[in-house]
Image (cartoon, rainbow, N blue to C red):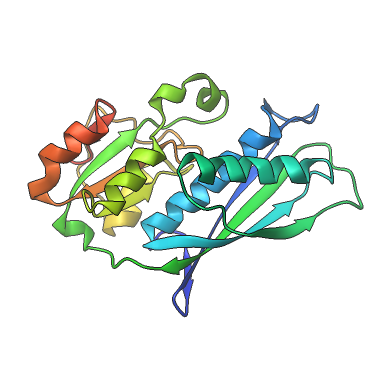
Length: 224
């Protein structure tokens, strides 16, 4: 279990974004659509990590009325880019008080569809690079491609994924395996993974060569 909540076969995942957007006092200046797209990206990756598929989305918008359609557009771009139907979106906007910085949260409700293999029975790799802030915008070629991940899951070429968050690779590996593991030395272990720019990918031993060809050069062993 990572950060998901599972209730009666439903999987609930969420991600927050703050001080990222188009307001003058934001720390990272990007279009509001981009901020929402990456927040939804994290919540969707956590759905897949839990064996879930999205069926509805709640958008919590603290930025104002003008941002709502932009945020919905960013969420729509994510799902459309993955050739997935866009789940119905509902939620709430803070419209009584004008905030100085942008803030939103995307919560995805999914249906549990896939059983999860024991992580100790799989070979694990890191796909993508840990990036945060401006790096996410400036180095898109280093970000894990969710379309490739989705296709691999759909075709049973991989068994599991595990997104890397702000705690970095070392912290996520300890969550995944339940203990400290000897990790590959050339990996940056503590840098934030930002909006799930890198993922752990779990593969059956017999499918490792196929996975290496599929994911390309930003795909490295996680453990020694």
